[in-house]
Length: 95
Image (cartoon, rainbow, N blue to C red; front, side):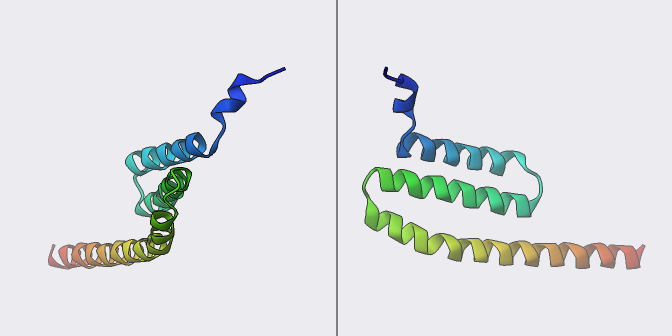
């Protein structure tokens, strides 16, 4: 007996679903750290889709640069939070 629903479960559709979940999380979640987690999920889905398309060289480069970009994004989030904290403290001191 054949199960036609199992034909939909392959690397391409699973990767696309993971990427869509990551994109939806990036849009809907308000906290920056949650957005970083969803970005990692989105990147995982993207790399899976690239591998399914057999562009292994592009997947390798993306796999190398994704953690680097995540670290840079985390550093930017920390810096922005520091600036916001200092600005709110200065406004509190002035008032």
